Length: 446
Image 1: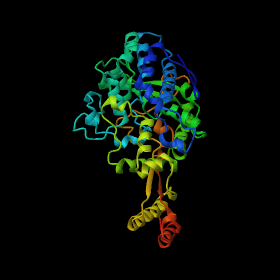
Image 2: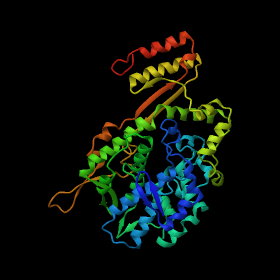
Image 3: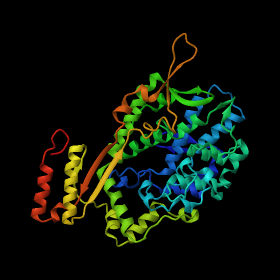
Image 4: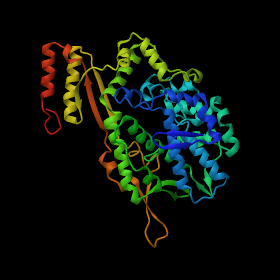
């Protein structure tokens, strides 16, 4: 089977994989937009989780073939290759309508009744009262019987185990009882493969940056994918394989990081789509249960973008109608530094004192969510330096090879206030303008 992708070109799907992408569970992703409400800002941003998932698998396949090219094809390598590919294909099946926008109305995790073996380490004990996430639904779908028949062909040909696929997605090797499943010639390749699923240099990011840039009609997400993949390498440390890149590709890696950072500032944190999300949240909070995401998986499969939008259209809730009609209150205040934030907070406090309704959006993002946690759970990517005449290469932690992590390690927040300035009386408007017009001194406020 061949799929024509506007980003990657022709993507070939193996016969044994067709039942997986043809299953109603995976086809549901055709109706889940990749960027949720961003379509209201970038009309071309109609790309779906369906094609994104296939694109991520394509990049993952290329990365695997680059890293394992020295291995002759055998049963172990083929099983690992297919398991790795399938960690990408269903990785988004748990996404709720409008992607991340509606996760706030997911049920408590305990209602999903997931076997604790498949949960993150932090959830192995306790009462599981935290709110479920789309990752939890993904694991639930994957390990329950809903998807079992679709995996029969890959299980019979390569010996792929759904528990091993879940392990790669969650990073929890305890999902599978076979500790040697990811071993080849005595080397444990699980850390490396999971890094390509979730890390600074994972295939998910590689695809969504290129795809979102293409469909939004912007250039921020461009980077040299071919050079990045060609310079991936395997680093063996204490019998475990870790992901590495050649030192000659560090500049390309920097470009990859900056592409993501710029996409967050210019696309993912666009004031209009963020404000629409805040209006959607207000609808969820004030609609008295008009919309709730079910824990039952059969019911959950009905919930896609069209389902949620039909609920919003039929609702008399003013926030629902604002989302449907793409109508947001005017943006009055915006802060990019501490001085501007101090002024914005003063306006916000004054609005509360006067009983004026407003929308406050705070878009916080880091260049890296792994930077501060690199010594704990997430193994770092290694930079490989080969020296002429020296047999063994030198390894350097990626965080030491580039200064971008240090430069952008602090949270970058954009805060905004939206409200109808024209509807306020003259004295209130005047006071607000007085607060806004005070120029911050040395970035610290007045």
